[in-house]
Image (tube, rainbow, N blue to C red; front, top):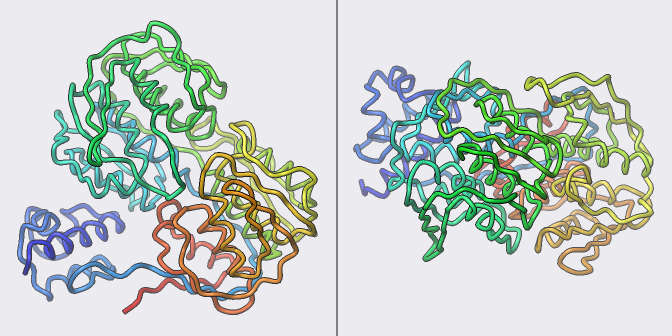
Length: 508
């Protein structure tokens, strides 16, 4: 069997094992073999029979094909169904990936509670594993344990996994304290047009990081220095702020970061840094003062908060299907503007009293959405940095506006291409007019119709299309939904639990 096939099969087995939440030792025990044998299989260094592949697939309850890659996953959606009951919001995708990158700051054991089991997290875990970090799912696969090695093997980095996530850029901040020279693959992720990394470089240069880019690789050299004045971010971006925080955390001194994002994932990162012993002043504001420590070696246990963008997704699902649905564990601080806009459009909703998230800091509510007659808003829908309307929540207003009476202008000024992908709703009966790459005019109400189509290559527009299919009478097919799995854990199954009818399948 060719080495290339052995490596492919090994990667499939590793992914299936991690998805099950098993260690290599647990799989070895189920197969009656050794952990070292499983390790060789997953690295593509051992011949493997079709019988063994079948045994592994049965043990992991996974579709491991006999040769090559499994086909892409698709969704078959029977629409026109009302949702009912209640559904919990999962932990934040963007917080979880930031905390995984932040674990590189710590020489001790990090445990993250209720980590989102999504493709974006799996890619970061693959990268961490390739450079020597030991990770394993614990407590029945709910929580994640991370233990770093004494020395990272950055030459062995999994470039393929790294290129499939833009979060890899957040390795720059913690790595500049660990090594003097290293390489990282270009960041990937969603296809959202040109997204410059220069704001990251401007901030990190103040700590002595110099990066050149050639042939798909960032070449980083570090001559550590201390910022002699406050760092002013040229973009109030979330990952830019997080990278600056990660660099400041192990800088032996005080770093002031201005024009910082105060968004949900940044706040979660600040809370985590405080658990590591790093004092952060100004959390929730645009000026952060970080009292860094040169060495971090603690055993830390942290619970990231819930995802406001997933909460908005579930709210939109209730609206477009004209359903009554209770969405539990909604991080209300990061949804207040969205809800204020929706109330002006006519949304009927109730909220519980506020209660704390597991991190003890984020405020949660249970939100019940009732069927409502919506009117298009007078003003355009457009994002702003927190506490404004979240940029990742803007696409869901396209689906909501499609069921409202009148015309709604949506201005997605941040991303070059995302407004274009929203016009895929026209295949489902929507009336969306693209005015330019950033603005789309939505006219409602919509007479939804079923369709078969490819998944847009951007996460939030892909979910918007899925919501349109849920509203459309008949059977729709959404093909190649990897991008949805990047950001949502078991979304189809969870929507099915409240009344949707969505089937996952692969081509044979």
